[in-house]
Image (cartoon, rainbow, N blue to C red; front, top):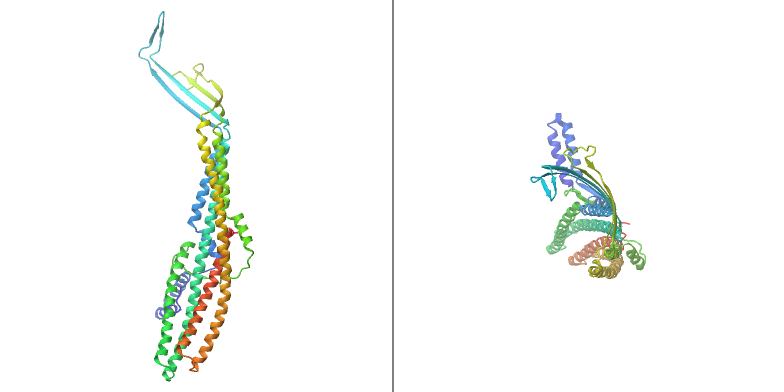
Amino acid sequence: MINNTNQTKNHYVFAKVAKPLKGYGSALLLFGLLTAQVAKAQDKTLTIQEAIKLGIDNSKTLKLSQSKIDRAVSQYNQAKDRQLPTGNASFAYNRAQIPAHTLNLGGQTIELPNSANAYLGIASVEETIFAGGRLKYAQQSTELLTQVARLDADKDKDQIVYDVINAYYNLYKVLQSQKVVAQNITSIDQQLTQAQRFFDQGLVTKNDVLRFQLQKSNIQLSGLDLESNRKIINYNLDVLLGLPETTELKIDVVNEANHSLAPLTAYIDSAMNTRQELRQLDLQNRYAETNIKSITAQRLPTVGVGANLYYLDLSGNPIPTSGNYIVPITLAATVSWNFGTLWTNKNKEAEARIQREETVINKSITTDYLKDEVNRNYQSYVTAQDKIKLLETAIAQANENNKILESKYQSNIASVTDRVDAQTLLYQAQINLELAKADAGLAYYTLLKSTGKLNK
């Protein structure tokens, strides 16, 4: 934030330096303008929609969520690849040394060579025709997990948006409170000047002047606390939005306190249809059912077909020559059955069914929790709106009371204590109203988040 006093001082210094350096006037002027632009760049005024966009674009959490989605998609593609035929090829060279190369078989003697060479090449292609549906169920399971990962990313995005909105409104509350503090300090200064004049005229005591000074000190202490909170919230919001930590954020006008409300049932129905948690539990239930089918499919046999090509060459030359090699081709169909799964998979199936029941129960619990959450947020927003109406009435009353006591004090009818108390009540009511407006705006976004429509 640029201080006006510092700006004036800097301009004065710049003018003094520029006078004796007329030859460098243009360069210095350009340097001064560039410096001003750099300083100005540290201030940034944001609307709430701009803040949300920055938060989404620069969120490391969302980048991690996208990485999880990419991994789930990769696993899904791997499951699809398992349905494709498999192929394999190999080529080997063998050399045999035969020290005892004479073989006596009774009346017949066979003379073997001192050594022998052999080249063996094999190429095979295999494809599973039937596996009880296990490959299909594996593909369905990974597809469901991919959808769960996408819903996780949507949920993370909602949370990032809400965190930005929450920090935005907290900063707005502090900035508005600082405005009220500044206004009240200005008002106290006026009263203090008047009290000092009355004291000089002998109309009030020194204690009356001290009461105004004490009130000003108390308000200034509140201002120090507010400035400390502003710096903390501003820094955290800079980090959340991916901005330089030195950026001083200013809040655009926020007018989110008065939204028309639909009936509570409409928000509950929206949550039941939209919340990612319930949609994830539906997917997890489908995943559990697919897992049961996959385990059951393990009881069934597997049928596959394949083709093999063999290259066999017994000559010492690896290059094929006529009459020295053979290339047999074989076709095969295989049926395999691990029938032990008929009794070893019973407990696996029982566990899978228990997991499915747990998912159903968990959805029922989550549904009740979400209904409570929506109702709580709905009532909080209604209460926030009611508070605004009451505080507006309170400010009108406090303002009228302040005017009356100001007139009485100037007429020396009311005491300084009454005058200070009236100003304190007005000051507190003004701050409470600004906080209530911000709380109402945040309560509305909290209600939207609980219905699953914060980003819709």
